Image 1 (cartoon, rainbow, N blue to C red):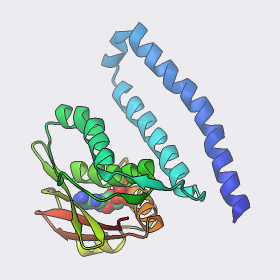
Image 2 (image 1 turned 60 degrees about the vertical axis):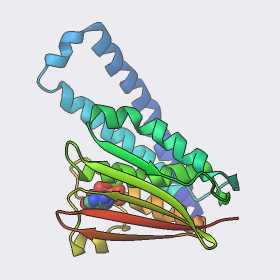
Image 3 (image 1 turned 180 degrees about the vertical axis):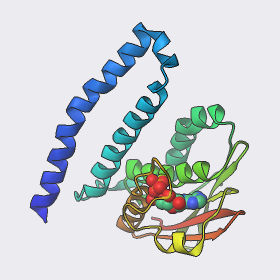
Length: 215
Ligand code: ADP
Ligand code: MG
């Protein structure tokens, strides 16, 4: 098993090197020959490249079996950094994103980067499930010895079959999906001794609830 994981990370690394060069070449072509944007197959080429990049990132995160570095985490900082990272996407895609968080929150024991990645995967799905003017909300609150994080959207929702396969790797309903986002998120939450649950109604929207122990 260890050997397989090592081989996977080596393969990812070997693919990433030439891919970085191809990415740079595409950027250079676009800046030196702006007229290429009018070429029929250019947008598709860029989309395909973005997909391969995403697939490699997801495969790397999914096959990463190392123990996380854990420390005291201020969840408020993680959420603020998420808000900053998402601002350009929210603006460009005409979405609404609101965050509700109390002024005081206890710290938790975990890895801030991994937690950010877990929330980002959920938020990305939430935005992708909504159209223009779609609303996504994130709320954080303390309840007894737990912190409860809720990510909700007013998007397309899911049927029972999709819900049942939700955390199964490579199960996707998107033409450019990797089907790894939720599997990665679940792994991260479990590594923090937390739980993740979903409630969804077709055509109405979806709510993911994460419960994490705090310090
Ligand atoms: P991907 O986003 O690459 O498809 P994920 O593991 O992130 O992979 O999600 C798996 C599938 O779960 C998605 O393809 C989608 O069908 C469904 N899904 C996840 N989150 C939502 C959501 N908020 N609203 C509707 N469907 C969702
Ligand atoms: Mg996803």
